[in-house]
Image (cartoon, rainbow over all chains, first blue to last red; front, side, top):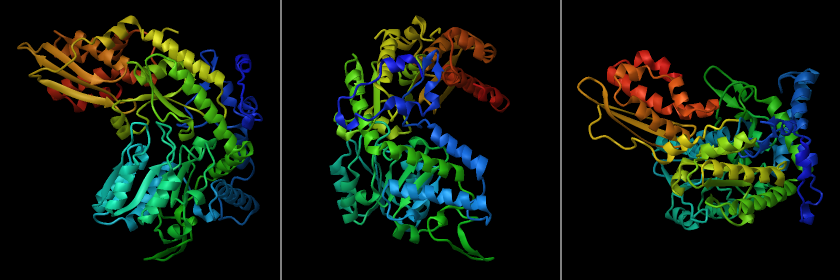
Amino acid sequence: MGDSMQRHAPVYSSAKVASYDVEKIRADFPILGRLMNGKPLAYLDNAATSQKPVQVIESLDRYYNEYNANVYRGVYRISEEATLAYENARKKIAQLINAKYPSEIIFVRGTTEAINLVAHSWGRQNIGLGESIMLTEMEHHSNIVPWQLLTREKTAQLKYVGVTDDARLDQEDFHGHLENGGVKLFAVTHVSNVLGTINPIKEMTREAHMHNCRVVVDAAQSVPHMPVDVQDLDCDFLAFSGHKMCGPTGIGVLYGKRELLEKMEPYQTGGEMIREVHLYESTYKDPPFKFEAGTTDIAGAIGLGTAVDYLSKIGFRNVRNHERELANYTLDKLQRIKHMKIFGPEESAMRGGVISFNLADVHAHDMASLLDEDGVAVRSGHHCAQPLMERLGIESTTRASLYLYNTEAEIDRLVESIGRAGRVFKI
Amino acid sequence: MSSVYSEIILDYYRHPRNKGTLSNPQIKARDSNPLCGDMIEMQLELDGDGKVDDVKFNGQGCAISQASASMLTELVKGKKLDEVRAISKEDILSLIGGQLSAVRLKCALLSLKVLKTGVYGYLGSMDSSKDELSTL
């Protein structure tokens, strides 16, 4: 890591995070030492994917070097070791989100596959002609398109909860749709990947349940960043990805309440998910195995388990506090830039570490290219949320998204680089 | 590092030449870059000799995609379709100047792709040109 990072070491005023040693955390992430155009990489695209600590990378190495074997099938020692590590990862994840049973944790490829699983299995069984699925205008495409296909197949309807001018879900829309009846499912993001808005999932779930409406939560931007308790939220399904929380790509999680999973048909079929196969019929294993056909991403699951250990040791409350303070710092600095438009809620209690902005008429892609020249990695575009872009009346935004290893010094570089972009564009 | 954002690019971005629509274009095509959301439409009117009599573009997106589209319209005006067909990637890059990453190259070349799609469609030679278009 460059000396300049040390020089600008952040100072925290809050006693809560006095013990939070961001430089010690940074030392666990080899990639953060990489130089871009001679400057250390300032990685601010964590909503897209997070970087990986050595602990996770080494746990993948260890699996492949020392006990690589398929799970459940072998009676030899390394297969038992692999099975144990795989199932331990499931237990760690169950504990992390406070699921009642480890069997409520299904390993999938990521949030997208988790939502598709719910649509294909629960959705096909439970959504009927003329019934409705309720979404919101701030959903990621992965929480829109599966429901479009399902409602088309079932001649059912989609209803949308709008986004207010202060970047929240329109509660009147929400009450209205429920009271009009026929809404069987509410699919909603926990934290918006564009606005950073933290939605009141617990309250909305309680109300949805009073109307016999199930709730599936896209937690891709929440589980990595803050404590999430599925029993407290009482949601029926919750989906998230491993790669956004220091884990490998290719592994993700669907949580589902046991009583629902037990009644659901399989999603994909094949090996390892069946109890008995005959020529004309088969019976399936119990959840979660019923939903894990074929050889799953064993290494990925084990790596995700290690990522959960890593983050739990630092503490999700500490991660949240760090991001919240850094988001405040970022918002404060950005607000001082002339012709800067920032999207999302103003109160930090209501938002995660996702900050979208546009500077005057500088297109987001031009902004991101100019920031890249300074070694600052941000995302630009519609962020797979075109309906939200339409609602905001824009084509795209530049997005900086924070994580546990980001520093005020990196935000200073972001701000400085935005200033340079402004000068290039003669703003 | 030489920035691609020269005075010229910014001038074409903020004051695009030949932006708009034509009343009677024989050639019309549009495409978008799904990654960026850049969108370009090209319209061409030909004169009796088959030369480009007038050309307009319309669209939205980053400075590179919009400026290169505008520069391209100036380049094709008065040219025969055979000459338009011969315009290459390199021609566009030399108009723009500066270095572009692979991702941003797509922004720069979107207008050329749209133009060629339109011209090939008009000439009825779409199939034989798919390979070329896929490299843009």
